[in-house]
Length: 605
Image (cartoon, rainbow, N blue to C red; front, side):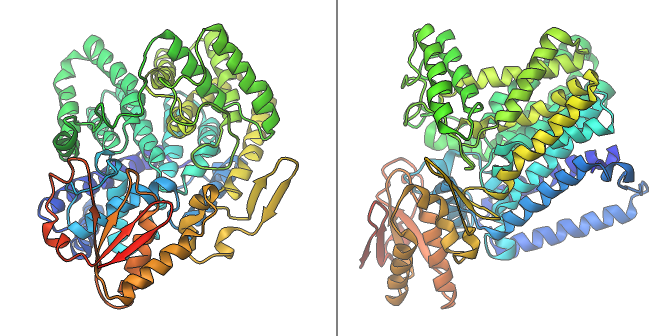
């Protein structure tokens, strides 16, 4: 598993290079309204040809090989199994995350239709203000192969790069090859990471950029090579273009690098000025669009900000720290979660005189502790317990070298800062994925210094056993079978891909929460539109679109069989995204209106 250091780092450089090309080219092609199948294919043909020429003409033709001794290590084999199995799952299932169905994939459909990534009318502001980089990558895949078959691979690739990069950080900490592998194992077995690696969520992509950022800080301090400031700048810029949580978890690493620059590296201070320039250059397009519709570069304002705490003080911070920790103490037995863990957390809240359901610090739904194999709520219980043990060792038993100590402070700060800023939500473990992945090197280093062979083996075995169900029984995308936890028993049935066609697989997550056969309803509506030969439709939807993407996917497929194009717009948009767009020409051609609510309505004009 562990390959020579220069190859591992080369992967990080190549990753940043590819994502930078995607970000820049999408904005540039969008400026000229020419985002389409032809331009994207030509772009990557040119990139591949140039890359081949550079490789051929390079004088440094290094031989990159696997270290044979380490590939035989059982940890390495298990990591490879996780990587291969999640890769297979990513290909078997189409996107079916609820967020993907409502806005991740929906915005891509509008970009393809419009030929750009400009503002368009929609009642779901998430389509406009959220970091677009993950969808830019999916957009390129979609236009290259004319479908969404590779959409889940973006997150999968991010997990792969994160596992390799945490092993690099462990190397910088002085760990030997076995503990470099252990850091990759700790990362690869994180339940939330396994769930997300086969989805079109964006948390693992953001995490990948954060991990590369952390590596570049340590690497620059150790080597003083200016190229790492450049890599840090690109990672930070791309991370911000991906997800807002990068501001939170990346802040402490920026502070660390800034303090180092001021007190120990003033002679190179001019190079640090590159950081804000590169970050703004990468994000200027999205910043500009967000300012137009929200007067804020990050897209949040008083009207649409439902994510941050309304009250920030010591009590609310303590409450969120306790509740976020409670998410990672969940066990398969719900009676323990409710009667012991949750009651204990409620008692702690009584002690500090604050409600665990305080709406100022809690999103809709109230506070509870779930245990699931679902990508938005999966707990990382074993990893959290191991980290608490390591945190105890590092605080009271082990003396950390300076860089290790600052790194440890940075990841703790990220966890605290997240709890200070963000409201508690049942989905918070998604965002905390970055924290757990960043913990991998420091856990590995502490165990490396502890030198307890039996303890290390026990932890490795526990991590492997603990992660296996999450690999095989993902609730939305199971490989072996669908696993259900009932009150008295556990039931097992065939995996969805053996029971349903690919179009039906879009609706898996939706079906967990609704009894209605939405696929059948969508298919009937699509066929009525096609039979009426209506090629321009208006979508009338509530604030959050619901299952718009699978409907559009069915519609596009139906019209492709007729060798015709379909156009679609959003109707009755009540926010200022409508004022900034011109859809009058298309509106005049609308021949059907589809309303998305509890019962889909179709009006043929």
